[in-house]
Amino acid sequence: MARILSFAALSAFSVLALSAPALAAGNPEAGQKKAAVCMGCHGPDGNSMVETWPKLADQLPEYLTAQLQAFKAGRRDNEQMSPQARLVADADIPDLAAYFSSQRMKPAVAAKPELLAQGERIFTQGKGRPAVVAACMGCHGQSGAGNRTWSDTMARPPVVLAPAIGGQHAAYLVAQLKAYKEGKRTTDAAHVMRDVAARLNENEMLAVAEYVATLKR
Image (cartoon, rainbow, N blue to C red; front, side, top):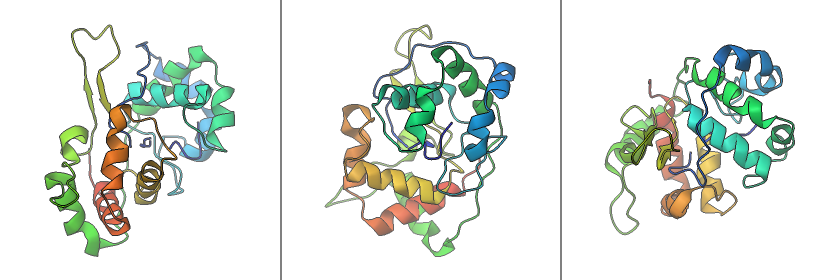
């Protein structure tokens, strides 16, 4: 599925989907049979062993679908993921998303425990002046389990699609924050993640990523 799903995201790590996909019920069993190529990077159960490749396990299926479609359409770009996404048939995307979202996320162990307190403050309380940042949990949830909000009916795509980030590799999360800050990733609706990342320095990114990586959801 990708070496760097810029989702998670572990995201695929964007707060709002740039263009939410049409909802389609995927089949996890069918997805497992189609996921051999994805498993080479993301692991057979969606828990990648390489920290620069995102974990896909227990991710919101709508988010996985949106990111695969974005890679395939060229709205997101990665030298490893983009070519792979272009080979995935549209009809297979919901099944792949359903399979990986049905797997259990395995949280990481903090590599830099000295940063956890600072990271927890940013995640749960945000950051004050002069560079104000809202609490990450406001969109991603207290445990980092993500959030989907529909306007009036689940027959339509969610109007808010914040990916699950709890337990994601810290290195991957930092890479995505930097990509947003540098304008290399632009799949966040209303510029939300780009605005957040622009107000965080590198140490703050490291701290919040270390904390998020330890969350169990």
